[in-house]
Image (cartoon, rainbow, N blue to C red; front, side, top):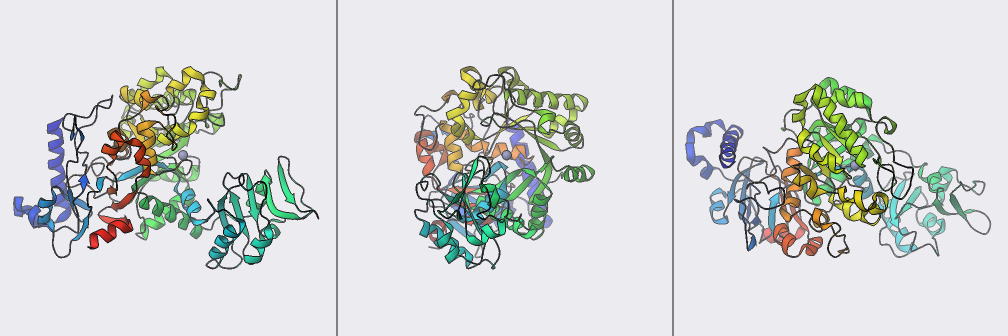
Length: 597
Ligand SMILES: [Zn+2]
């Protein structure tokens, strides 16, 4: 084990030579000391994660910087040049890499870890939400209208303004109407979705564009709220919301690209150096490719093509997967759906739902799973990530993967993934490792679903749900992620969920089925080294070592020490810097200020 890591390090140094300058090879061992860094991180609590993998029960490897006293950082400083790491070690020794042109970031005791990766995202939705007027936490109608009016100042007249987040529950006794909104924002149609999407609020122009008038009747299960004269007030409830929402034109190509970029920028600000986009259609790929061509991608993108977009899949089938990791955008994976979701009882179960006898959900062909196309893509060398939630959904997906691998054993090296792997029957647990299938899972789902998951599954089957430890013990590789925008992608929430199985209110006290918890080290690896493996990038990133990509996340707390001693405090952590390929993609004002001094 040790010698193979040494060999790998040697190869990386060779690689680095090739990357920097060929003439340096003749300079021999002195080269490192003479190369100045572009960027130097000093005085940090640096965890390189270049030690061995933890055991399946979570015990740290013998060479991990861990003892009875707990975790201790294994470095303080990182020197970076040309997008790659030159040196990791003591601050004192890092000084050798400093020149007048070197930018120095003084971490002042902040923690630096390998760059975070969210390995299952839907980033356009995140960017769209970030681009909308944010009405979460507005207390009054006046406040909400003022925010919309402020946005209107920078939007061309006639263009829609969208917002979301006003609380239909809190405002239920006195809904706002269109009067003030139309007065302050007369020239833009406005649609403001409520926090839980059960209500919509619009201005006069929006109602005109949607053709909603006193003549419009309320649809079944919905209500067009009216005043005493019978005119719509501006509020639509439940199934009446689409009357207005459907009048909003789909985003133009340019708008969509701006949503994608906005989403990626949010990720950079939140500490992520890369995302795996779980199901990119043609529009999304066009946006990624355009942003890459313009050099605008703030974080790396590992695109999983949507098999639901058959023409796109066929185009890539002819072209073949990307084999190199030399670009910010890498496309060598596809995403397919095998069954539905557990909450809405769409996930396919082996036995009836505990809370709906006679019902088992739907899967496979019935759910639009294109077995033939997915098999063709696998045979053409694409990794496949298949969404499977129920225990039958997972079993049938494993059966499918096994059947393709039986025909073509080398496809096993493609690191196929089951996205969610949410409920797995005990008999199927060992099959993941046997088939080399990665379980790509969302720690937040466990703490969010815990209130109803047991209702759906009953006391026995629930033991195979969100069963991270059980899967690990059986030798399964995990990849951790958020499935944003469905769940909050905040890394501190993700780590906290994985380590404690408690929600944001720290409930339940002992954790929900706590025997399935991960250790702090496993949780961090789940978002770093393990996600690097899931994208075939473990030789480039996932650990901090010379020759690797300079992809680094800096945070204001030590995730291993805090995650062990006071995991609840993780929820108050914040990101200080995100470094992608040696470029500072995000820097918190506090850190920027500190390092100027
Ligand atoms: Zn998803």
